[in-house]
Picture (cartoon, rainbow over the protein chains, first blue to last red):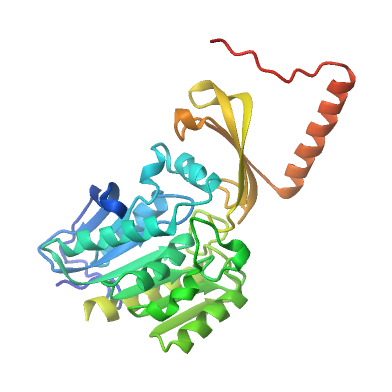
Length: 260
Length: 95
């Protein structure tokens, strides 16, 4: 398998190609949903990664993020977790979900598991599949890695509402993800900004204590001068230095656990 | 969303969206991530008609201060209209 990105730099005399397109796969309850799929051209085999979009929606940043993983040698798939809410611009659909208090956790688990199974069915995907997400997608990456067997690495970027009080629980989110920590089935990397309010540094501390308590394989990277969403180059929260370092940490982690 | 602070109420009104005027049937108010305001969180108001799909939406994103001014101004205007005997509570829609 070719090796671009991660610890090794792309060489100017290499061939490079990518296919990126909308596909469908089965999600929760066997329902067919859309997904954005990007992969390097070639026979592979490539490791896979499920890219879980953030609360604002299945948007352009997540398409770019999916292609970024393909550029770095992964077969990357980003399921539309809001598929059942109707169609329109990502903002309009995201606003509808925002008003409805999000989508049910069990549905997210089923959709992400379906994306993982889709990857595992492909002849050019090797035996390793990771999961990545930011914001609520980071929460869900951790949550799904606890609820579903079959992931080999999980990337949680500033997952809000991993730690939830009883008052925060809703019919759609009936259990705090932190309560599933003992079931985490793969190595985890966490990336957080110390100026974030959700998750706050105190909540990240609790998250970490629980991982230690259950002797889980994890690494947390916590950045000063950064808040929520500091990878988003199109938002004022973007922090160049921290984002560049965070991406390096994430890609090195995935290379270690999915490409070795 | 990250805060999950949101509420939906049924209302009667009319809004002008990307395809022109439509009947507004729901009001969605949240304090969560905005799409356009350069803030981590904002007070978001969406006037929508869910029966017409996600695109039937008139959206505003406000700072908390702007949202309070909006509420205060609406109260003042309604009080003035009520004092003048102008208030109409029922919408007469064509069949």
